[in-house]
Image (cartoon, rainbow, N blue to C red; front, top):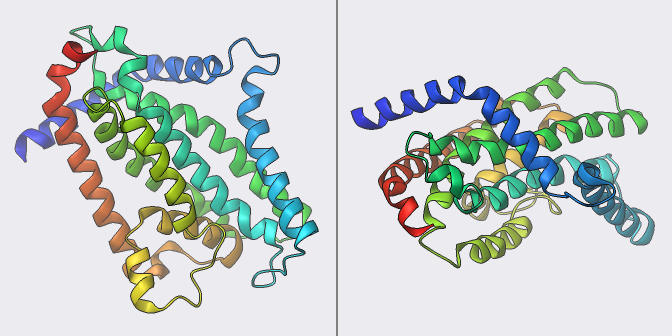
Length: 270
């Protein structure tokens, strides 16, 4: 445990020391995703917006879905959907980080543990735009501003901590498990449907709900709705906070340990 704490302190120090390089890599990563296309970086915004537009048309125009808790379906949908999009984007891109930056991994003096942070930061740039988009959408629909909007900072930060642990774990395993990327893609599809994005946790039996709360994104997606719709502070969620932070701590520590153990072997398999 002492070695882990020492290594984590060293990681934070290197992260701060290399912040300019990390921001530069994150910006380049964002630009390179759609390099050569006419709209370039704007595709990162257009794709989620088109998805939201499709869901709005299908459920509000086509199915004429009734408001949920007196909130139009699209407003109920987008906070959870966009929080999931941030998580999904960061996980899917960070898994292959070691392959993508193999030229840096093979450099002896480069702190490889900061590379997954580049992918998370790249996804965060997009997510910050969509947080503003959520606020604008609620304003267009005439929803009053709530001070609870500000706690989206807390939920966004909680997502980043969760992503850091998971990205360390997955990116360190990917060079050794060639099918991991495809497996993660399948898990993300399943995770989308078992997370309360399209459905509400209300009405679910307490026993099943307790099991569903073990999914950390249950906490995050509901938290985003708490910010923008229900006006509930995170400390009012009681035991759900404990579930999330215990699971996040396990992911974070496990990811750090596995990454540290496998780091010396990355150059051999890349």
